Length: 265
Picture 1 (tube, one colour):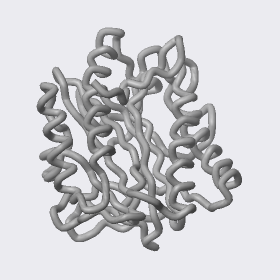
Picture 2 (cartoon, rainbow, N blue to C red):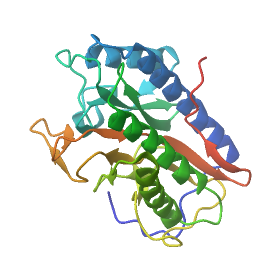
Picture 3 (spheres, rainbow, N blue to C red):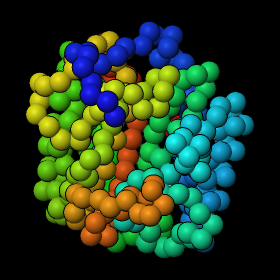
C-alpha cells in the first residue's frame, strides 16, 4: 500500500455510489448464501464454488479470484486463520468452528468488498462473544463515516469500541496488527489505508461521497500474525481464534450508507 498524500478521502458521485451498491449487493447475496451453507461436514472449497456461482449468475465477476494469484472467489478463514484462507477440499467444517468469509465482486467496473464471520453450530462462549464484539466494533466504526470527520475518527472509534467490548463481554479482545480497511472504487484496494486503532481528528478528511471498506479483525489472544508457506493464509501467532467483519461504506449527508447491503434477492 502506497503512502497516502491526499488530504481528503476520494469521493464518488451519487451515480457512482449507486453503481458501487449494485456490486456490493451481489457480494451481500454471496455472503448470505455461504453463511446459510456453512454447516458441519461442508468443505470451504464447496463454499467457494457457491459464492462464485452467485456472483457470476448476477452478472458480476469475483474480484478475489486471480488477484495477485489468489485461487479462490472467497477467503475462507477458520478459527486461528485471520485472513486470506485459501478454500480447500481438505478443510471440512466441524461443530464449534468459527469461519470468517471475505468476498468481493466487480460489476460494471466497480468493486464491492465485505466480510462476515459464521459460527458453525454451537461454539464456546468466548468465541461467540468474540464474534459479536467484532460486529459491535464494526458498527462503531461505520457510525463515524460522515462528512466532516477524519480517517482517524474511524480508527479511534474501533479502538475504543474494542476496549468497551472487552469490558462488556468479560473477555480480552485484541485488535489485529498490520491489517485494516482501505479505499475502494474502480480498484479493490486503494488509498487510504484505514488502521483499526489510532488518534481522533487526524488524517484525511471525509467528504460527501467518500467511500471506505471498514474491516475490524479481533482475536481472543495475540494481536500478531504469521503468514504460512502458501504466502496467503495468515494465522494468529498464538493460534487464538479470530473474527473479521467488513462493509463498504459511503459518507453521505444523511449518515453512513452501507454499499454492501445483505438482502436476499
